[in-house]
Image 1: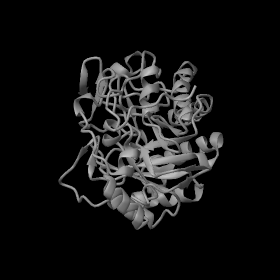
Image 2: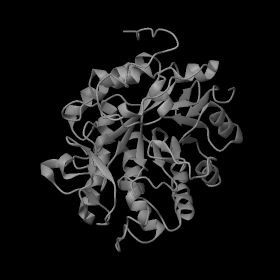
Image 3: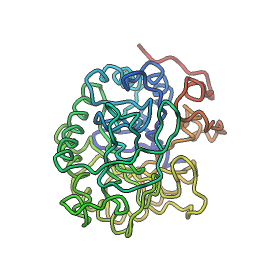
Length: 370
């Protein structure tokens, strides 16, 4: 594990290893989409000295939620809750980026302000699901955003990024994958617009680039990142020419001098491996040809495959999801080649400390320094 466990620079930071906590929707926020002490404990457990964590998808605008229990940063009242999380991470010598997202059409009126209709680039029927007080339900059909509303959303992301500074984060990742709003604009099976946000690659990428530049205006480019899912189909997504589209996206992001570009491999569908897909990591291999900055790869990696992709030069760090859920000390386990705890899939989304902060460590965890 020599490469996986070696030091690496990301933006202004140096990390002691290349095992990253992936952004994982766990739906444990308290009322008002505010992180509580339980979330702070969860992130603290997964922090190692010199380690890097990416926070879970955090709602950037009041109409951006798709999951009951997801946290937000669209309101000043949410800052203090996130400060508990960032303080806990920093106390153990780690760094954490805020991941901002908008669910777009992947939502339901029950989790929208005043029961409103979800929004998206176009009103296209699809088979996605949202999580409400009654559990997983089919999404409410969305309406298409007006151009003026898109401008408002750009400002919502800028404001959320500013709150991220007050909350103590070390940077911001923009979530443009997994069938959420940016992905809906990028891919042409969900974007049927005929204005400046639809049609050509340039137009479909416009919203993502506008938001990225807005967040850079707050944080500076070396503390801003973007996550995309080339050929991702989660949320009924698809594109007529995904290779060309995501090559174009990478080429447009490359000159911005981002902290990193985060790529989800298409072999993972949601949180489940898709056995019908090529199990080799193809997304990072494609994008590396067009993006020479730092790349984080995610999606079904184990210790040996993570080591391989870093040695091959297609990625610089690897984000782990399900195995990091079940193994709060995952970097140590990979370093010492110890067996991993099994994860409990039914407890992934929502609930209590069970399946969240109760997974065993190799050794008893030491309390963080005050």
